Amino acid sequence: MQIAFLTLFLGLVNGAQTVAVDAGPGVAAVDLVLDGHSVVVKLGPPPWSSSVDLGTALLPHHLEARGLAADGSEVARAEQWLNLPRPPAEVGIVLENSGVDRIRTARLTWDTLKGTPPSAVELSLDGEPLKLDAEARAPLAIPNAGAAHVLSARLRFGVGLEARKELVLTGDYDSAVATELTAVPVRTGGPGKPVRLLTPGELAGRFLAAGRPAAVAAVEREPPEVFVVRAAGAENFLYARQLSPSAYLYGHFKPVDHLLVHFVSPIAKHAVEGHTTSELFDISPAFMAEHSYMAHLMLAGRFDIPGRPQLADAVAVAGQHALDRQTPRAVVLIAGSGDGVPDGSRFSPAAVRAYLAAAGVPFFVWSTNKSSLRPEDWGLIADISTPLGLEAAYKQLKEEVLAQQIVWLEGRHLPQSITLAPGGEAGMELVAKAATP
Image (cartoon, rainbow, N blue to C red; front, side):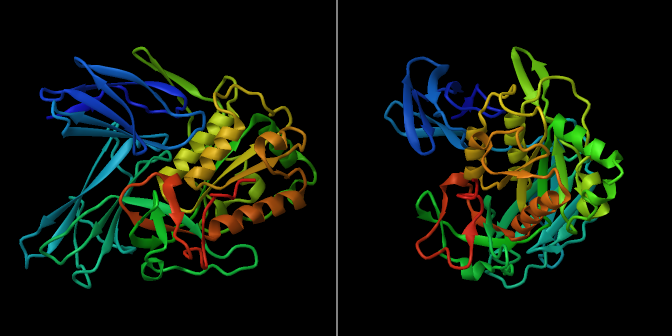
């Protein structure tokens, strides 16, 4: 028996939403379950449609449709994850027996909405790169039979598009069990404190998901990625500053090595498909921070898109991209004169800040004009109109992202459901849960 959603939530949503589902024979009723709580049981002939209230806050949600038989037993299930990344590119890991000494082999498969081939294909076991052949296969020499190991695939398709997949492998060469994983950023170190690399063993029993113990599969520390929304007023200021006689003083320092910077357009493109109009915010490819001075870097990834700015909405989309990358992360809004609220956004700055905090994405606001944004809307605003102000703002951003590492928890969980067990905060803290001013 099958059940399927007729309503697919591809963008950011909150409030009351109409949810429609269809089911095959044998399904007499549908139980809609939001974040583990039954919100409606719809009886009558299919298809079923009902309103589900997501609340006024902008938060990630897990929505399930459970098909029930006439006796009330569950016979089918479908699910959606709302306000979380839905990737335009996906990669799969297929485990095979090679037939040579019963050694297990991993084979990668992938697909994109546009059928674009990947420009780079990577596979690693416990962080160690594996060599792939022409058919995207690699033998798995799994050490410590019976222990848990993490197999990670990462594909790049150009223009900022990536696909990742992680599997937890248990057993030896003859058997393996794969499970979904949730990436949880944690912070060790910080201003004046050295960063200490964690191990899965010392993290055992320190995480809860919805109040229940969550098993740690692995810990990774990859290059951090920063997602920048740059408003037009800030762009004009930065461009003028570069042409000024004192340009070499402003931002004439190189950012930290191995930091990747993406830019997200503050103006949406509107794509129409059938009766649905979608807002799409372009994202630039990644720029390596060490390849240019800070003032030049902040002018990279320029967009030529006409329309009304939607700063808050663009910041929320930048947060989704940060979640999708599953690396140490932060979002930065660079604003300038005339870039204040209100703008054309559907979501308020307060709602977006709460969304980023719940999702574990640190958020920084920089302004080239102190009066352009209101602190009561956006929180703490760093003035970067002077060389000293820019260096201080960048130092704070650098210390944040370099203090992060990713803990992989077994199973898929809502980010806001992850907490530390009593006593689990020793030597670390969850990123952004209370970091947003």
